[in-house]
Image 1: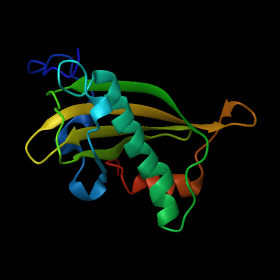
Image 2: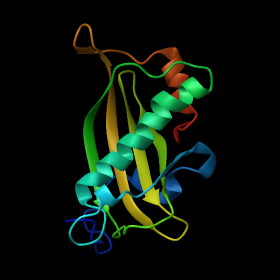
Image 3: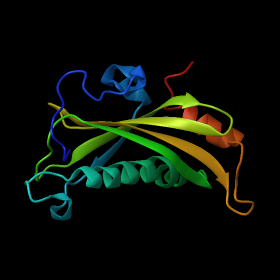
Length: 160
């Protein structure tokens, strides 16, 4: 399954939080990602595994880089508990970057769920989700999200 499009309904996540209507533009974090030659497989499109790099780059931008740029603190001690990815269309090598748009679909005391779309102005290539768990590295245990973390995440949340 190297980035081939799926028939309508095939392999789609049951959660409606992965659809493009789920989060208005002002609730989405936007990260521009250049398709790299190293992302391309022998079939000439981005290899399915390399899309996880796109998601990681966007997640780091949203949770670590941008908070620091805004004068805050990066989120500390987060681990990925689960990834889901649906490949919609092949993404070929191209000069223009794609957008990785990310938003929050669920926030709980210890975890939150991110939804993503990798897209350009015409099409969506990938829809994905990641469940993130707040983690205390010293005690090697889950921890509660801080008030600052919760406030930051709510900026991108579709929950009221």
